[in-house]
Length: 208
Image 1 (spheres, rainbow, N blue to C red):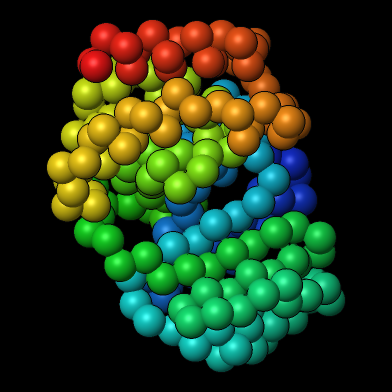
Image 2 (spheres, rainbow, N blue to C red; image 1 turned 120 degrees about the vertical axis):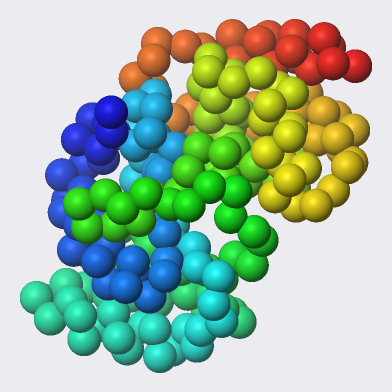
C-alpha cells in the first residue's frame, strides 16, 4: 500500500506526477525521505529527491525541465554542481542528483514515477546519519525499525556501499546532539522524539 495522498500536500503530489514521467524516462527514481514516507506513511514530506546513475549536465537538465513544464510553473535554480541540480518549482524543493552506488532492488514503477525500494532507502538513511543526521532521518530510521531489525538495515548499508565499517554507523545512530534543535517533522504515527532516541539507543546497545 502506498501512502502518497496522506504524506504529500496536493500540490506536491501533482508536481510529482507531472515531473515523475519526465524523470523516469531519464532513469531517475524518487528516493529520500519522501519516498520512504510514501512507502510507510509515517510522516508528511515536502520535497522531491530524484536520483539516477548516469552523468548529466545540470544546465541542460534545467532547460529540459522548463521545456517539459510549459504550464506557467515558476522554476528557480537554487544550486548546481557536477551531476547535481537543485530547484524550486512553484515553491516546492526538487533535487536531481547522480547516485552511482549499486541498486539493491529495482525501483518500482508507480503511476508516473519510479519509486526506490525500502532496502535502498534504508541504506541511504544510514549513510545520511553517518554524515550528520537530521532529526527527520532519525524518525525515519525509527519507523524502519518497526519492520526491520537493525542488523538487516546494516546489511543493506554494507551491501550498497561495499563497506564493513558498521561501527561508524552504530556510533552515529546514538549521536543526537546536532538534531536536538531541529524542528520535528509532521508525524502521522504519534511517536515522540524521546521515544525515537530511546528505541534507537536500545537496539544499538543490543548489537554492541
